[in-house]
Image 1 (cartoon, one colour):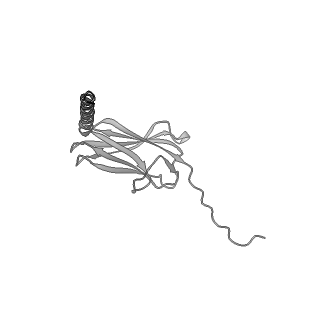
Image 2 (cartoon, helix red, strand yellow):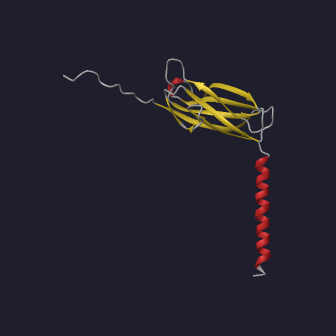
Image 3 (cartoon, helix red, strand yellow):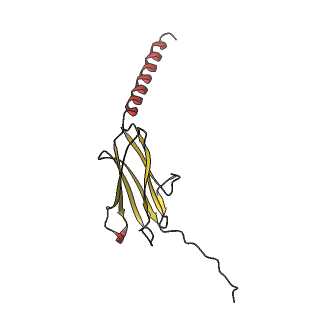
Amino acid sequence: MRSTLPYLAIAFLLVWVTAKEGVAQSSGRKAIHAFVAADEQRKPRTRFSSDVPRIYACWKGQSLDVGDKIRAVWIAEDVGAASPKDTKIRDAEVQVFKTDENGEVFLSRPTGQDWPLGRYRVEFYLNGSILEVAKFTIEPGVQVETPVTGTPK
């Protein structure tokens, strides 16, 4: 029993040092955790109906510095004949005001039409370096059936 005690102490010390190093590395590292959502409720999604009015690109920052710049770039990866592959749609940039900044930018559906079907992504940059990519697809909208009026003949 006595001979195993030093080994247990060494094992405990190694686990403690490894855990402490992991916390030190993660606490000082800038990060952005990003996703896309259909509304301001911020429920992450990867598939959207072609008739959804807006798509939100959301992020949560970690260990950011005041003054950092977060940029979101919307890209149509593959939308068939609607546009060439990897077409930039729009980008938006915001300045960070607190270390755990979070926020969103949105893209509205084209006026009078549905979203082009296909694959999209939003690239998230921090001070010019890409940190995160959120991918999603646009699928055909839900067909709404209207009730039949009148009586059959």
